[in-house]
Length: 117
View 1 (cartoon, rainbow, N blue to C red):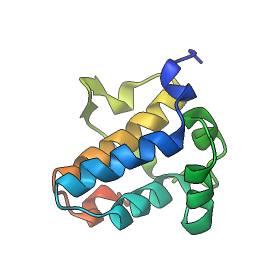
View 2: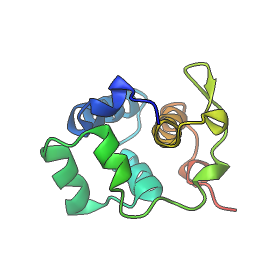
View 3: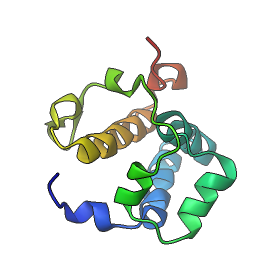
View 4: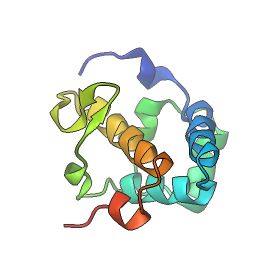
């Protein structure tokens, strides 16, 4: 695994950016939370604890309660990179989250964002 600087960023500092991006496009914090819960298993108090305490993105992803088994259905491009082709496992997980937040901000329906086989 490559040592990317992004993994040392605190999730609690990135999370408000996800919410802001969604809200600027008329979506809600609850929808962002729903995406995070679907992808990682962090919900309610567990999510709030991660946001409120200094937790790196690396730790956020490594300690996720239950990564969704259908996350490999997430396809597409984020920042010019195809998420399904990212070799570094942690970077791919982070790109999955970025992709889902992008889809939310673009107005995609939650049923389509939260993939099912």
